[in-house]
Image 1 (tube, rainbow, N blue to C red):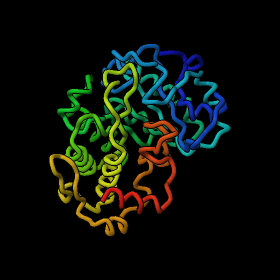
Image 2: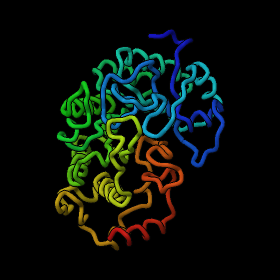
Image 3: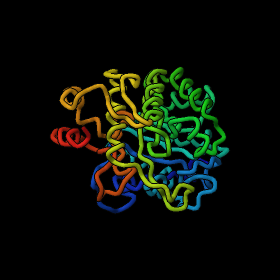
Length: 320
């Protein structure tokens, strides 16, 4: 593990602009400061969609479509002390010294006094307790695939499907209900029924869910796979909202050949029960994750700010 003074950290490009470490225009201001652990090599896992994967040929400075330049941790902490954010979020790649590096980063960030979200591969209970003492209040669990079959196809990982679920339950045990955020990527080859069923399973164990749209990145194993339809993704957001808020269960939905065809509501009833927040980023408090899955020129899969109320009405007319 590096000495703290010489330790480096990756900073998302938008966060770097907000901190004054990079120059650029902001179309949507990030309300959370996003960081990623720095390691000279790639992740020891080999997820087919990930830029950081062991066999990826993609630019190592990226995660999804976001660039993450490297800075000295000491300089980042100094800038953070003068900038207002609601939360800090640390993404990690997996490598032998990961746990020690995360502890060093958390110790450096602790004086700032902001709540911290940490996305990490499975660790033991003792590490979770240490992270909690150092300001972490939410843990991201990168399940990513919504079925065991797809998981085994795209997640060439040291951790099995069942180990990821066990980790989520371990997080809930230490941090409490709704503090484990299970990450799911829509568009990896799962059916919509499997995707929504996994969302239901996550809520049934006391977890939360954050969904992403698959993003093909040049140099990854899935670089030639297309992104999911925005139309179908909107249906997944509606399903997530209904399940999360206990309005409906997945058993109440109707599927045909694995695709959602009915939520058990008419369009008028959906207008009554849905909020326009249904299409915004669903993550930890203070997270808006702007333009993580798409170019700013396109309609975002997850809006960084709540769209106008009329958007919901117009969209439902298109969907139903």
